[in-house]
Length: 235
Image 1 (cartoon, one colour):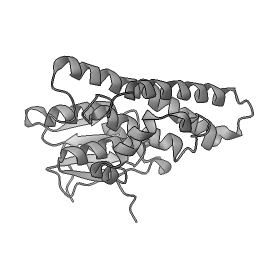
Image 2: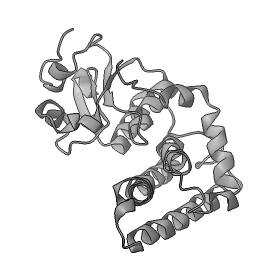
Image 3: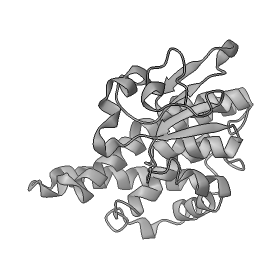
């Protein structure tokens, strides 16, 4: 399989289809943002599983595309002006793909900016806070005797869920009647919080009405169901 000229990452994860978008990710809340987006908009892409448990993001090939060593990242061989483009940061990739296709982002300028602010809200608040709660509740943080960090992230996650609950009051999706990149950015984190992290009781998720109903609507979408399992771990 060929490598993509100018992108050393493709030497570690060769492209069987170098003419389509290359996705380097794992099915984490951040990783599935891009696979769901690509499934929703119908762009052809080739997924490559990056084993974060084996620290593959810290190898020189991955770092050549994302010096921050985090998934997801993409290469679009048909980027702006027809030139190849490499991108990292899930929010930036969502926005790029929305602009590339003209899909899943409002076309009205003011509504577009409103969607971008909610996307930034997810990136700056929901992802980091829910992730820290997961660490202190499910992973090595459980062993820390001082429970103040856990309480801090539980309280903040509850507060953020309240923001989401208020926003969804009277709305089907975060931008109203249309499913957008805002919903894509959030759904994996909410799903993980109550599922994989097992923190639903901690954050009193059962007391919410609008967020659980919204998550059910998200998960009922066929493209979301497909994207949640991509990339698959080899073997």
